Amino acid sequence: MLDSSEIPARQSRSERLADLAAAISVDGPGVRDARTPDLRKGQKAALTVTLKKGTYDLYCPVDGHRQLGMEQHIHVG
Ligand SMILES: [Cu+2]
Image (cartoon, rainbow, N blue to C red; front, side):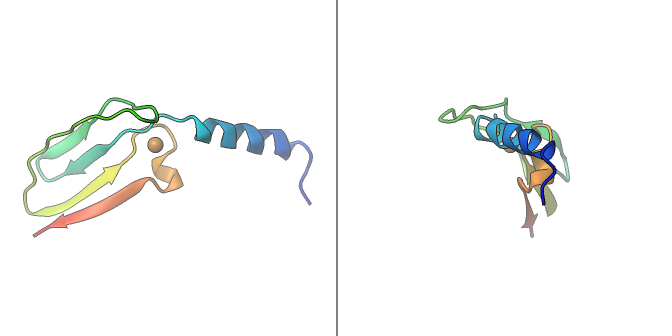
């Protein structure tokens, strides 16, 4: 059973998630913290990086988003 004190926190968290900025950051061989600005829904940005052989992490650098699963890995062979 939920403690009533937990409910407002969960609601406010999902409200924040609905209106969050997003961005893309890339880390890997020869690329360190390359990122777009924070973007709101409907906004676009371009990010150019030079990839070498290796594994790159692509993730959202907005606080807490990576921990929520906004990350992906790519391997360049
Ligand atoms: Cu995000």
